[in-house]
Length: 409
Ligand code: GDP
Image 1 (cartoon, rainbow, N blue to C red):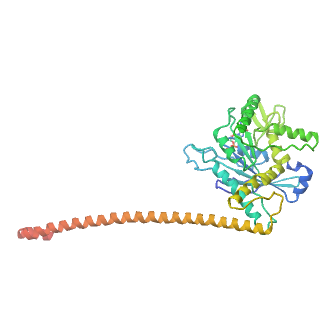
Image 2: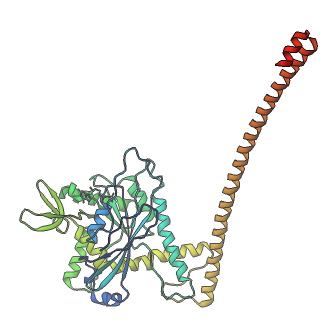
Image 3: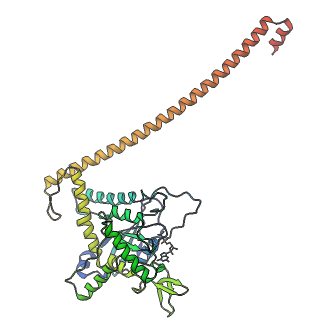
């Protein structure tokens, strides 16, 4: 496995090959067979305030250093002005099944004095990816569409034990119809079981009160009893109370586990009695991987697409499964192309306007400088003129001695 540091630039892609147990090779056979050949592709976004354990959880989830730990900012260091969006790509292979995992990290979220704007770059990223998908759909050759849409957003809630914060509600309210939201209680090892139980109830009622829909783990009644019971248990545990650790710990009975060591014992991340980490992983990369992708495609993307095309004057009266006629497709393509051109034109106009403003500013500056130089020279000349006049006067009125002195000077 090769490990590289994620870059701090806004969209950087790092590719890694990982060989460790993740779990997606246990997907139901039918789905697996279909996807084994081309491999799976899953894009997960992680959002939450700094220090809530996002990087650690992703590494725990994929059993590898996908996200390198971020150095805390020095108190005196200048803080970034906006939320960054960073891409980390990892190829994970397990029992011959390939998963291309794309993690979209969003450092800086919630770190500002005024967090009102924190959601915008995240929303833009999600919509840009929908846009990229739409452009590919309208290509003449659509055989190889690369799906970079965000299939799940793990939202980290601070383990306060109180209600959701304003920023949590605002974020989820704005994003819930664009992405599959999976809220998690971060660092659940800092709360007791009872506190977690109460906190979950409060979070769920806050979500319901604010009309926020989160991703629901599907339960397939036609599956065997055990699978249905398992799926129900996963659904009941939402919002998952997670603990992350990418380090090994030794339990008092001598087992080596992934966990966090405390003076009183070890919190095991893979132990369902200790936290919901296993359920989150099960939902993401095993039982609901296909549901996440399907819901993104058939509900979230379709709604966005319909809204976008309607805004462009293209009526959407087809269901997802109906084929669009070639003439209709051409019309759509033309309108989308025109919209793109208009967007580019507007962007170019903005750039032009900015350049003109800059040039005007520069001209104004040099005008001020010229005026100052002119004034300086004028003052110097008038001073010289006064001195000369003085001397002339002395010459005309003075004695020969004074005339000599003036002449010498
Ligand atoms: P990020 O800024 O959200 O990516 O947070 P990090 O993953 O870098 O974690 C910040 C700090 O919290 C590190 O010292 C981690 O070791 C610690 N941490 C991560 N996950 C947990 C957890 O589940 N419980 C506790 N108690 N600490 C955690």
